[in-house]
Figure 1 (tube, protein in one colour):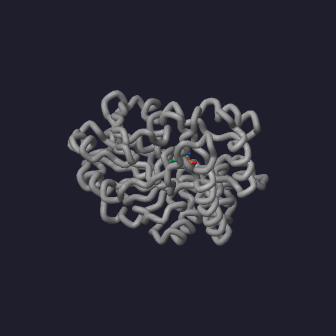
Figure 2 (figure 1 turned 90 degrees about the horizontal axis):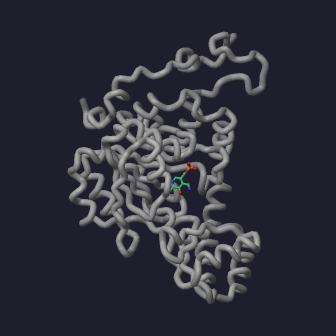
Length: 343
Ligand code: PMP
């Protein structure tokens, strides 16, 4: 048994997956009488369960072999699948670094897995002295790292990420949902070097396809075989696979939009710093800004009252709102309304 197999829950290791009609016959031509579908189109046929065309396109886009790519119904599905593969309910634990993305905690609760919170340090980076003693705990099966982090916007120091990957016996899930907005290198190239690393990215942010629910996991085939084994057979609809293929087919507008959003984030950060009610704007490698304001609840309510919806994160980080960079005119409206608030 290799290291991954040892980490996998015994029931998942022993599981014989459902074999769908499209797993058993992969050809595209013929009279299909095998899947109890309707013969009448256009959406009568089940999707490709292994999303071969889309995975080939992602492989090409990212320069990563198809065997290292898994697609989920959003990254949120990948997160949940990881819990179900590696964590025995009621027994195992994970480590997360709050304040961070909420689904790591929610998915843990759904799967009856205990969460150990190791708070980010004063620079919102990983607190290595605090996490180091936990790295040898065999009951801790996964560590979630979000970089760039939601809601703080900063990237984690790559040396600290590397330290955790090298010294932890369990699985490191590195969530790079916002990596396209950052000039720091992705860890995607390192999956071949580490048999315990899963890098997640998504079509929901820079690719502009949150509605299509497509998340990507990059890892060794030894890990991905378990994701394929336990996922729902047809986890991504044909409509969404095709939409994503189309988007990848012409990637230039995505690159232009990403550049525009990075410029807008910079412009917005600069302008926000001059707004009286704003106390602090943190640097961001994402498409949003963490902003401390004088009275977050009041500012949030006043903005909402003017039909501008931001995220109130003040329960997680005192006084803070998270503001996504929109179009130039949306951002100007926000600045205008914020400038009028007097408290
Ligand atoms: N990871 C992070 C850090 C996120 O902020 C989000 C969405 N807010 C997700 C994952 C979820 O991505 P998806 O839409 O692919 O499920």
